[in-house]
Image 1 (cartoon, one colour):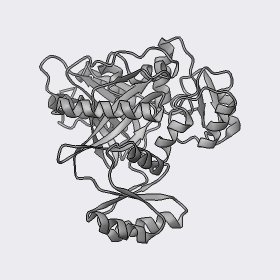
Image 2 (cartoon, helix red, strand yellow):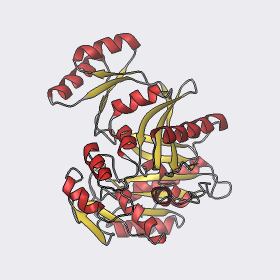
Image 3 (cartoon, helix red, strand yellow):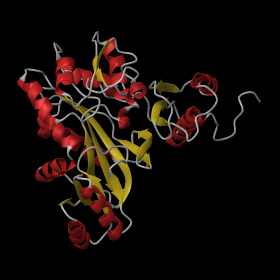
Image 4 (cartoon, helix red, strand yellow):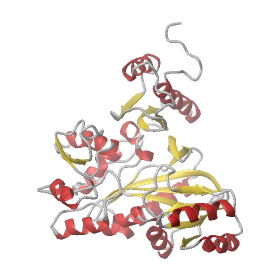
Length: 388
């Protein structure tokens, strides 16, 4: 797996159960996956020699992130390496303009957009759509980075001018009037078998996912099926092998629009580790190893995931003690920590709360968010005192 982050770390957990060893290409020995894998190659994903060392004698090469240069992957394929997803698919998760144009050609619902080569392009597009716009870097943005939600055309012009002056390619999109954000997670095997988990609602703060509600509350069967069918169709049309996450907008008028694609395990699927018959990490391995795909049925009516984000000030209380207190209060909480140093806003873990009989999604969400906040801040949001 190229990349030594938390996705590779959790994929390694699934690999152990399948009798597989996950080799990791990491930039440092203290990265989350490098801490736990016995087979680590140190090097950069932009270094072809490092990629070749990582790919030597492997069954399949796959990804923790999408940032490996396409030309390097094409050379690996020419070397005979089994790359999954293949570079001609992965490019649609690397380049937003390529993705928008291809989805447009496939008839998939996407926001109106335009490639930008000058600030005048922003003016023309804003006049054309008659509403607010979003500026996105064509490559490299994630977790809200590389996205400017412009409050005015002047702000959009300024953002584009800065990006273009730095040599960064950007595009402009209409800002979608949305009810909420959804994610449709599917997997596809090399010979075309597909599987879909229930569509989830993702809750964002400052461009970072903080909570996932699985399945999305109040989502009609019709719209949920449409989202899953769209994701499975895109996986097939693009030639994806492995997990595909399709991030969606549910618009105020009840339609769907595709926002982003990710061709790897995804934050919106972390709930599957405890709330589904087959986790996204096991499924990704099944897919890239060409095993039959696993059952994606949920284990409870609702599961809620809360992301643990680094606090503005790292608590004095150790993480070990925070986990101790959390389990004393919520023995059913399923904690997944990534072995990362705590920094403000950094994803350092997540908590899953799997619903029991009669538990509402609102109660589960409150518990999951409270647990995640406790692990981040060592403070209970309701003032609870374990020693009282």
